[in-house]
Length: 43
Image (cartoon, rainbow, N blue to C red):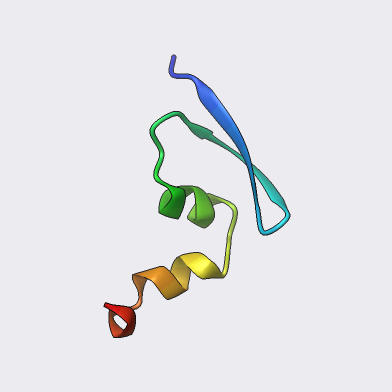
């Protein structure tokens, strides 16, 4: 079993497996910023 990491993103508590990217953790926390980062317009 992998180690779990506890984070707070935009005020939302989220627990993700160690090694999870910040982007995926933001998705788990339902952060509005995860959608901005994925937009092709900002590449």
